[in-house]
Image (cartoon, rainbow, N blue to C red; front, side, top):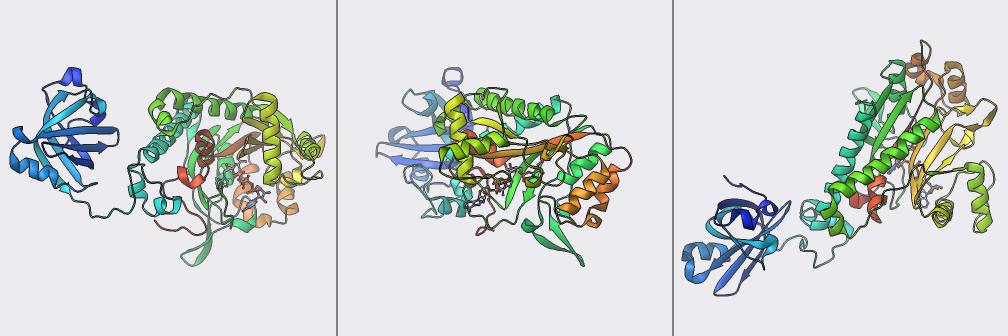
Length: 439
Ligand code: ATP
Ligand code: AMO
């Protein structure tokens, strides 16, 4: 076997004198003359291989001394408890197999001793992933996705996969990526919006999807990507309050699961997490405008979208009042929100829509949706869109469409705000932005 154990799964007390094989990267070779240490690193941690000159076959010792950092080895040997070594043991090797030799110099440092800038790290992401911090981020991201799937599945949601190559825009026509689809023009999907709503007419009742969304925004910010991962739900016989409750409970559950299952990774990152308190505070759009104007840094009028600055003003205001980072802004002007958001029956200038915010940025948008086909068609028209392009969607509303609502939350922003990471690119393996198309 090339590997019998991860380095962290060798228990020195239980496994003393047992033969094991570990496999991974040569983290370090420390040759002190009379004794040589080779530290082998794998996903889970590090293990020390110790060669005492007097007791080791000279050929094996030469091999160990000649190992180039970051090369791949498999080491077979006997476990000896050793308090000074990582994980409390060392391996006295019988065999060292070099499986792949690394070139030098390395494109970047992986020990955490030298700080590389983000661009260098992203250019060599394969190498960056060998840093403990980076591995920790993506292990936590996995836990987040696992918790989302677990929470939604056990809340009766069916996981779906809808097309990413599509014929229409959903979130406004300006930010589409056109592609060539045989002899026709097509686009990369901005959101599963239209499809998840059509599934409500199909009777799936509650659906969720985790998948890529594409936005051709020319933003160069710390929180925008051109390809992001969205977690979307749609649920029938629900209003906006029902789906907000699902959202806040899901976010709280995700935090809870990360705290429960990723304590080592949180420690590596120096992050202390607390589960956000539910229910999240709800402030209306009107109140949000009043709060912003009361601070005097900006002057907003009714109907304006919230700027980045005003999101921060409100976020800090809520945090100072409640000690919580998460909150909702509800009851947005109908004109600010996409065509599918349902206006209040008695006050059509307001919509049954919401944003779920973190102190530092928007995390999610959602709404109860229009389910009447005529009203939907006229909203499409009044936003300057051509209803003919939406015929495949509108049809689903004419033959029995239940009232429904839903939301989309950016997975990348959820992880980013949870870990207090400054740049969204830090939580995405191979980010796509204005400048970056490779790797
Ligand atoms: P969404 O996911 O809906 O895009 P968001 O919070 O990113 O949510 P945007 O509408 O993209 O919302 O941007 C929010 C605010 O940030 C807007 O007022 C927008 O003008 C501003 N903004 C976007 N890009 C930049 C930028 N590069 N520099 C400064 N402000 C920006
Ligand atoms: P919205 O456009 O607000 O809503 O997108 C939902 C969430 O997706 C994330 N997000 C992004 N993250 C990183 N980079 C981007 N360029 C980016 N764009 C969006 C954000 C955002 O809050 N169809 C609706 C959802 C719904 O109503 O169900 C929608 O797409 O976290």
